[in-house]
Image (cartoon, rainbow, N blue to C red; front, side, top):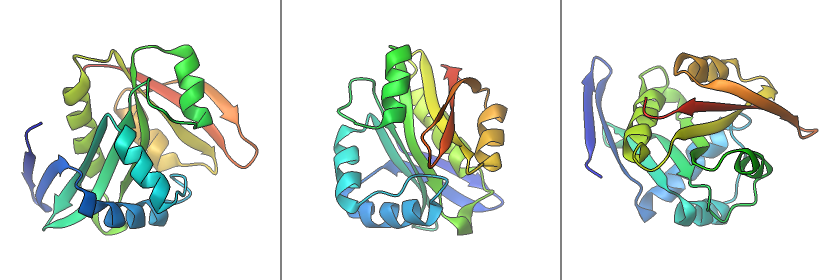
Length: 172
């Protein structure tokens, strides 16, 4: 896929495929975003990277500012949220995790990554799906997904966390 560049008042942003050397920075961004995303080991991140259908970073000023990791339904992944969606939908891209470093939030990075992912897979998938925390509540993510046209399709209480599953038709 071609590299995507965007200019704004916040500076230049570049979206690109993840390289092996990016994984440490991605892991740090992920861990700083907990509990909005689940914590994971570096080894688990490497495994997810191998399974990913879409895995790109956003760079601002040559620094990784955020990332989006998505999986296809046939991915070898043991997440109960992924399984819940897989039992109900056939043709979807699963957003496993998205995170933007706190110093770069509010610049449209997650939105740019979502639109890029949607464009990249629109010919293959009919839907894009995710889950968002209801407990602990993630109002920023709920609002973000609602503004992008995601609709709730179910909830699940895992005990330590409760999630709302959300789906949106492709293309955006």
